[in-house]
Length: 158
Image (cartoon, rainbow, N blue to C red):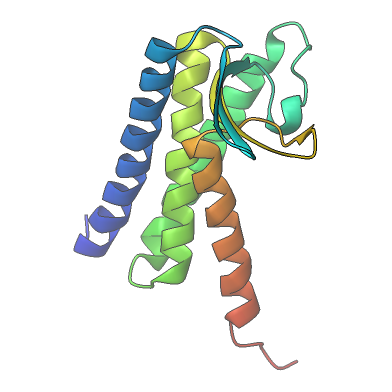
């Protein structure tokens, strides 16, 4: 394994560890549904989401757990292949590592709890953004960085 690849895999592992530590702290500190007001626009809350983003398929009856696990593991294999191919670069492997760590962090939750542990609750004027976690944040930042990398990439001439 190249040194560059090892560095990006270490970043993905760091995301997984940070995600799991924060989720374990929330599980140990809150009861399901309990909320703590931190600021006028931010709460900590313990929510279990059996679905995907915005609770997509949350009420699907249980099959979605395995669907999302298989999907995340398949995407993770693709991300690993991309990381190997682009390990010497900067922006793209950073993005891929964040997405990989976030995806695997949420897979761990699905295996442990049959749902993803969410706890970050931002709101404004009574409207709440769906609660999310460190893994979701890493995935989102990774996707934004991938888009930025694509936007900055030189365009090929026809």
